[in-house]
Image (cartoon, rainbow over all chains, first blue to last red; front, side, top):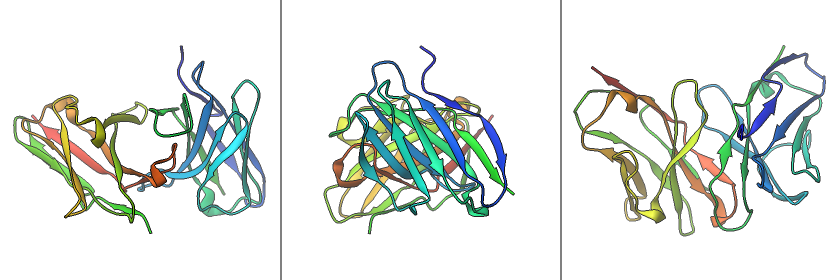
Length: 114
Length: 110
């Protein structure tokens, strides 16, 4: 098993553009979560999805959206990009959504907005 | 509001010396706290969670509700412990909604 895979690994976008980041969870994991990690800070929770439904949302504007597909993979979309959206975006997968199960993180997608 | 602080951005110790990485939190509910670690060029991974009370790679962490702290300790540091360490608080004891601290970079010198 390759673990959680994210694509692309790096990308550069211009202010105002839209971006889609992709995540494939570990086989058998039904929950996917997204985090934003700005340089010098810890990860900040954006979304959690389980069985294609949103189960949690962090304090992010509506420009951020996500979805989960029947195969449990997920996409994170960010519209109207701002310079401040430049960050490492992490995806994590876990077996369940309730209580606590260990989350396994991907390597991340480094987004640079210019 | 929930918050996690880690006062040290960088902590350098010599091999064999004791290590203590500090973590303080603010949370109105009953806290569920975790330590995550990221070794060089590796993914962020769970090190330990307070409820399991396990010792992982020689590290332990005790939850002190009176001082709202969850410091990570190891009696004898090894060079392979050099990494970035994040303290995290699970919000509402639910799922993957964590509040992470800013992290402490531990450097163990030979």
